[in-house]
Amino acid sequence: MKKLESSRLSRMGSAIFSEVAEWKREVAARGMDVIDLGIGSPDRPPSPAVMRALEEAVRDPSMYGYPSSEGSLAFRETVARWYKHRFGIGLDPEQEIVTLMGSQDGLAHLAMAITNPGDAALVPDPGYPIYAASLVLAGVEPVLMPLRSENGFLPVLADIPEETARRAKFMLLNYPSNPLSAVATPEFFRAAVDFARKHELLIVHDLAYSEMAFDGFRPPSILEIEGAKEVAVEFHSLSKSFNMAGCRIAFMVGRPDVVRSLRILKSNIDYGVFNAVQRAGIAAMEEDMAPGSVPVAGLYERRRDVLIEGLRRAGWTIPKPKATMFVWARIPAGWTSRQISREMLFSSGVVVIPGDAFGSEGEGYVRIALVQEEARLQEAAERIGAFLAAARQLR
Image (cartoon, rainbow, N blue to C red; front, side):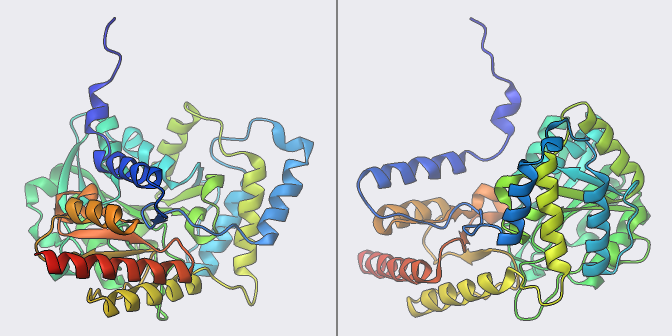
């Protein structure tokens, strides 16, 4: 039989994720209690109002026809009102918004909609794995932008060669960042918009974690910058903001011709998000805009503080992130990212993701997800502390 496996598969994603999953299965099979701080999936359900809206919608017989690939007008109009409420940005629901089956859906398909094979794109290193995988699918050359701690994990735009910037069709940004938990200021976004205008490239901004910020920080949208809609699109997901990860609903907003291109591509791939899920998404945004709403950020801020303080007491000092559901932790000297992740899991039962799963610049770090209750995070910190103490005695 002929081998039926595309060569693309070997260039997509990171084998490290599969490797960590196998480690976890092996440890669980031994009977060890596993505290999984690996996958970035919310551990809480949506609010009762969102679940009621979904329950009512699935009982509505009119929900079961094919939805439209661009999303219902009602959902897009609610997105426009939410963006105005949250960021002060006006959006045209007809031309500047497309509904998605999770932001990964849009991120995976956008390059195919706006580039040709052989084009180039600027992508962050470290970065969310779908960024690079989408370029493999589209036959686009990735040009890596190193994100390093000395630069606040922001790309140094001045270091990008003129020729490279001219060749690139788009530049991917993600702030607040997965996996880095880094944030960006309006001043950085202003410089990025100027850079994009100068080099005639598109900015693709992944804003999935805008509602998970701490200590009074409110992450901005790049579209708040004057003229940004001429050079930028932005993704947002209801997965993290409203605990709707399993519902698979998100949207992309911004530059109308790019929105149109993604709509056209998706109209040839799927028939859109189940209308009942769109109803639930509307309920989530309506609830968030209501007076007295309680954002999800407070939960993760408390969890962050418990974990960071517990690790500090264990002798592992990590700066407090300003946003996201992750801690990006520089590992103690003498380890590789994969080595410490594996040994920590087999010794303590705590799952973290090696930093190099997100790119070569991630070596020397691990990503820790705040996806357990505070008591479990405290226990995880204590277990990690015992592991590190034992390791220090052996070295």
